[in-house]
Image (cartoon, rainbow, N blue to C red; front, side, top):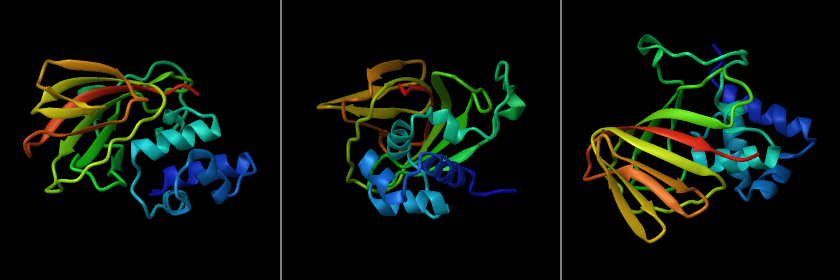
Length: 190
């Protein structure tokens, strides 16, 4: 099984645009080491740089995250809810490790990317807010998460939701060191 599908997709798309890794890094304002590390499968992916890369390449976030390109609806039953990509933040953050479960893998030409995300807190105390184009909707399922959005901090309990413009610097993280799970729908314009 190919363990570096994400990296190969980034490389293929970059080369199709006749860009060097440095060109792509410049376009998406990422360090060259991040681009090279993602392409080589040596750096765990994070949403912030992936969104910048998709914008620079003119593709949807789902284009990088999907395993295949089926037409028709993406139906996922409870038995199919499996982890499709382990994503860990590239920045020093108190957000903890994030596990993403794609709910629309294989659905081409979509405008939204729905995920079930589990936050496993870490002991880190520093964090950095990151903004990117688009919108996000989060719905608490288990445990409690914090959303630092600009200068405000929102606490999201199970059954509560928040919708925001992701251009405002923000971070989603564990609350009080507890594990949590939430539904996230991310819209990123191309």
